[in-house]
Length: 201
Image 1 (tube, rainbow, N blue to C red):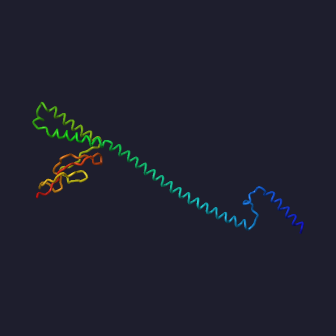
Image 2: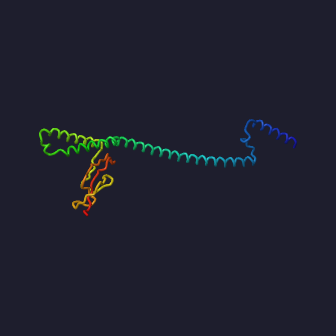
């Protein structure tokens, strides 16, 4: 009996020597406490994996949102650049409209006898050619005249300055144009100033 105990002690000593340097939590002594610890560690590991999966899914969602935001910003910037190119001449075109108005009034005010006079034919032709050139340049930059006469009043393009009593047109129809209106591409550059028909009193 004593010999068995001595042998068991010697065997345990040898085992302890062999296990020397191995961390305690990695040693398997075959006890029930270690089995319980292993189960706890397994549960902890499962929870950790589940948490990592949740974190990964959240990171994927954040990445998708970030990509969508980036695409939206890029689209907005591209549209801003396109608008800047398309409407770069807006300020200049608006300023030059008064020049075109004055030139148009000058052409309209030339009496018919002067148009037929040999002394003034060249001058009249030059003024009319200048007016055509301005209209051509406007067209090249997307500036177009707004149609008005005989059309129903459109508050998006026409500005009613007065009402004209008449039976010759339906109420709300434009019967007089005091100043031409213009669009630059699909934007209003200047509304047409017009007179609108109304029923006589």
